[in-house]
Amino acid sequence: MSPPAKTHLHTDISDNQAPSRETRTSYIEAVRMLGAVVVGIGTAGWVRIRDMLAPEPGSLAEKLNVRGFISRRSLDPQQGVSQISIEEAVSRDDIHVAFICTENVLHEDNVSAFLQAGKHVCVEYPMTTNYKAAVELWDLAQKKGVILHEEHIELLTEDYKALRREVEGKILQEGTLHFTGGALKPGFGFPAFSGIARLTWLVELFGELSVTVATMEEDPANNYSKMTAKLLTSDNRPLTWIEERGPGLPRAKNINFHFDSCTLTQIPPAPRGNVGLFMQDLIHFSAKLEGQVSVEELRREKIRVLHCLQLAERIQQLC
Ligand code: NAD
Image (tube, rainbow, N blue to C red; front, side, top):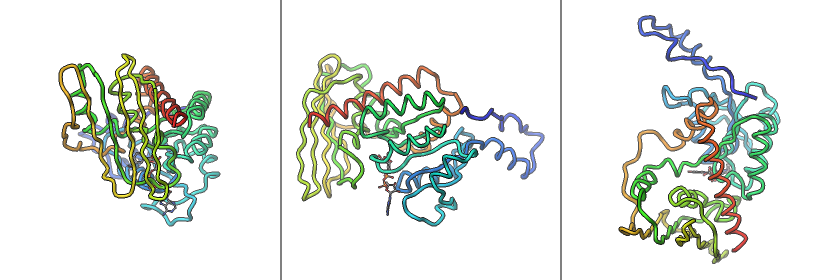
């Protein structure tokens, strides 16, 4: 299924012919031609609904029209949007897009159901909790001719952009990224998958990686876990990724990157951007739906996503 033909809201309405409110509403209706559903009403699902109800003005996200949500619970309307069943969502012709915002272990089945039905899918990271399933989902998306997008808001943060600017042009000798955070609820999978955002930072900053050693300390009675993965860059430079979680641990990323010229021990402070992270992701996803993201960029993203999932799986095996 391909997205509907474009209409040009902003070029069709000239300044000296201001449209009536009704005309403008019908224009907006006409361009909002991609019906969407949100699956899973937690933090992320709630934000997805909010962002589609109030998209960034003038952005491609205005093309999305949220038509319902799906939940295992029986819920009242959320932000004015009604609950529908998954059976209804996959069979309706006016629903073209699904946002999968459940716990990680449920992503695979939900993504698969919507791709099978020929719907575009935006899935919150990580796409799956195993590599093989992600490859199969990508093959399925290709077969069905639809977009499969994995959200990676960590790459859209001002922190990340500032760090990237700092790292640019420097030659890494060795480094550590140590993440701490509160205990995760059940269903978020092995830490190498639930923490894929950190791994994605390392891959985007330092290129393709391999795993040499990985260990896991666990204290289930206290909901504590610490995963340590030893990685190597393609130049054989060592990188250590630590993912430590337990009740009361502050949410923080501690870095220690040694370069040929200097050492970086802090993520450079950066003010928040004006556009929310999920909104930025929504606009990027919408651009993909509109065919406005180049084939080369889509290919690079797919390679990076699959590489990270493969590394996560290798870490899990070694642990
Ligand atoms: P969440 O715990 O808020 O929600 C996860 C799931 O739990 C949802 O399916 C939701 O329907 C269900 N749920 C929530 N409250 C419930 C309740 N009271 N009873 C029964 N079920 C309930 O998790 P989240 O933060 O929304 O994460 C969802 C996905 O988004 C994950 O894949 C995560 O990795 C991803 N993600 C989240 C964020 C974020 O900032 N929250 C950022 C990036 C990616």
